[in-house]
Length: 127
Image 1 (spheres, rainbow, N blue to C red):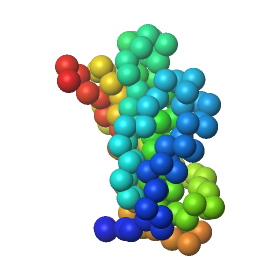
Image 2: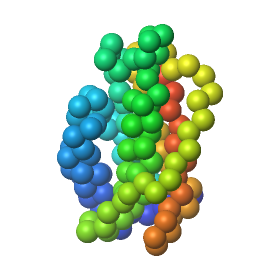
Image 3: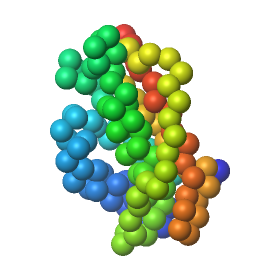
């Protein structure tokens, strides 16, 4: 879908809001790419983000995924509007082992009160 943002400075609004996310700062997550209706967040590999098998922890995975799916529709909002996640479901299809964890989100349906966003998380290994 080709959604148009309500403001031309949508990227700076998203990045400014993301900078206030103390959980993302605590994890060391970085907002990597922002475009209208799409956001990508990355989390570099570090020991503190892993579970007992050396894989990215599911909590770290879902934290950046939740944030990405929230900011994707937010990129289309008016500057004074906000977003909150009301529901999400995650299916882990494979172990996440790599140098970086990536969460990408894309708006599927933009609504006045409720939007639907699809997100995917995967690892990048060796670049």
